Image (tube, rainbow, N blue to C red; front, side, top):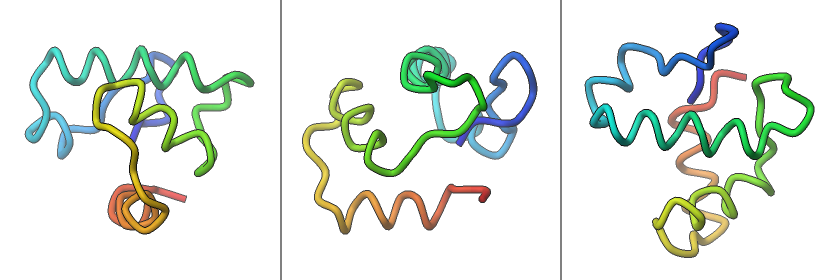
Length: 73
């Protein structure tokens, strides 16, 4: 979900969906989980990240669906 720019910019198509506050929270949370700072996050970390952002516990199927829709890799 996060662009490869050094400042972790949210791509335009996602900025149309999320509020500025959501974008800020997504970037900050992503940075917290991107331990090696390579601007990627592993699937197993994604569920914890979403839970920490207040989206509750996601099933593996829900995580997979989100990754399939938004993952650029």
